[in-house]
Image 1 (cartoon, each protein chain N blue to C red):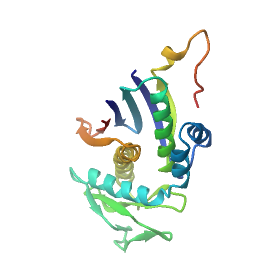
Image 2 (tube, rainbow over the protein chains, first blue to last red; image 1 turned 120 degrees about the horizontal axis):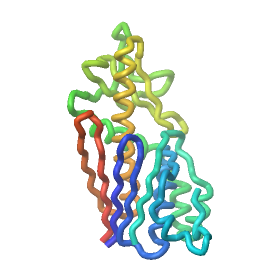
Image 3 (cartoon, rainbow over the protein chains, first blue to last red; image 1 turned 90 degrees about the horizontal axis):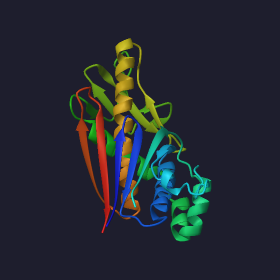
Image 4 (cartoon, helix red, strand yellow; image 1 turned 120 degrees about the vertical axis):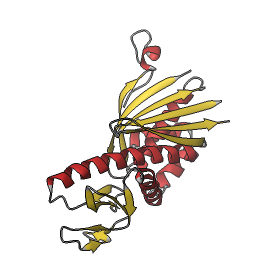
Length: 65
Length: 168
């Protein structure tokens, strides 16, 4: 079961993805950010807990916007 | 796998993230085309109305008009219709909420008195948080989740919203 919890506090969003496999949660996050923009909400990434997991051999496995 | 992303937000014109859309086009071309062609203006209006409903509690009343210093009421401001307004005892003339042609949320209020200015800022923050929560819920529903929304206020009057989406 996939679950996304979004906590809205003081103008910031905290998105918690659970139950996704592989790149699926990255893709879902990308889709959600596009839709925020479509609703007039510009977002910037303050932190991403997955970073530590994907930085391997000194290389980032994805490009952060 | 679990992932937590923290995002800061700014309300602006409804736009498209071109780089992100290009990635999505590769992954899910149908969804990318659908999002690109989505007329988001009605969705933004709906989110504004739902957000006002969320905020309209604890001494905040909703209305469809604002008034100036002399009490003259108006349902539009500079040619833009007021979608909704928030009023309190500290801001009896109200804070009007509008959406311009680019989908950007605009506010209008008479800020003649300093206490009105403070209340305008407080109401803007209350509204923006509620709008973010409702928009988050709408987005999760668009991408196929069953959602719930919950609000919790702290002792300082700040409200935290928790939006949950479950895909079964």
